[in-house]
Amino acid sequence: MRSRIVPVCVALLLSPLAGCNWFHDNILSKNKSVASNDEKPTKEKLISYLNRNAEQLDSIQVNNLGIEAKMGLGVARSIALSGTMQAKKPRNFRLEGYLPGAKSDLVDLGSNEREFWFWVGADARASEAPYLYHCSHTDLPKAQLPLPIHPDWIMEALGMATVVPSPNIRLEFARDGKTMELIEPTRSPQNQPMYKVTVFNARNVTGTEPQVLARKLVDARGKTICIAEIKAMQLDPHSKILVPHKIDLVYPSDRKMDEIALSLVLDTIAVNQPVDPAMAQVWFNRPNKPGIVALDLGRQGGNSSLRAPGGPSLGSPIIRGLRR
Image 1 (cartoon, rainbow, N blue to C red):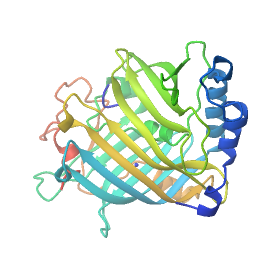
Image 2: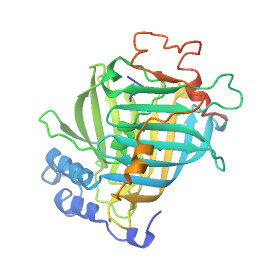
Image 3: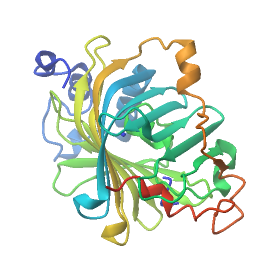
Image 4: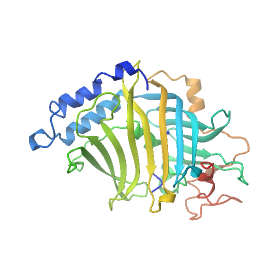
């Protein structure tokens, strides 16, 4: 399950943003410290805050996406890419990454209502072409994902997912009073108990500083499976909606050399802009890449080695394209 788990309008950003003012007025009680019990926000208000912001977001288009992918330690296991990203509720998503100046993509990650897919191109040392992996959402419980990046998780990090109120959700405060965590019980595709954790800044913020600091997926033992850290926000100049500008997606490992991190910088954004149906057909459907074999992970689920016919195991080639 470890695997389940990519500056605008500076003048406007210098003033308090609408979403932050709402957080100030309705949750933080006139920006006072949350140290005393009577001033602490409730889980109901925090859920309302998240849902209010998520309901404003229907789509995000990023025409200038900066991507830095890292595995383990050292620059020898990292690569910088340029790219684009499109996200439209409920499950339409596409992220493509290119080497700067290149015309062909090196990373392709996407989803629609039926399925999701991902492809990472091989480098010049690769002896075989990598596979384009795909899986239907219904087959996900029996699939093993070699690449720990899922479109649903990125859309949650963008703030597009709502929280269903439940008495099982709890709110915890850090001892230093600087953060608070909204903890939501959930289940993995394999029906294992998990927790979704939303980390809030406990004080009211303005400008590009994020109010939601991170979103984590934690197992029943408290081990972090993956974490999306929101580093900075930005205001879309047309919709006046606040969205992330910088996001770090981190997938920890018992060994530091196996940790995977993906940093995304979202520039030249368009929020809630109409999506041309012809472009939607291109963006949100699995591509047909000439010479690339498509491998259905749902049908490979019963094979523990997950080897493609005549090919290497899935754990090997999928990261190779992310190394220099």
